[in-house]
Image (tube, rainbow, N blue to C red; front, side, top):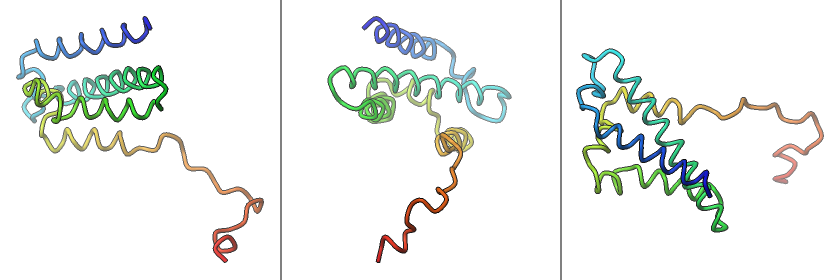
Length: 130
């Protein structure tokens, strides 16, 4: 239970720090050279931390961890965070096409390299369908 409290504290600390930083520092425009990467790292950290925290919470009540990860995505999105604290939600997830492209590129990357099908041990799709 102490891991969940520490994780929750880390998420709150990250959100608090983001809320205190001036928006010009985290702006994801072309004028600020490294700001886009800072916002991207904050996005990834917030998504991983909240997903892990909610995944562990769901496992403690007997649900699959993926339920908690989905709930974390909803909590960080415009439905909850955007409703409660819209400035932080727009700061963390700006409506910049380049920023969205970076996050989409990471989320669509395969978790592991594709594997080759086994050599002749399993029947092919054609024989299964007949």
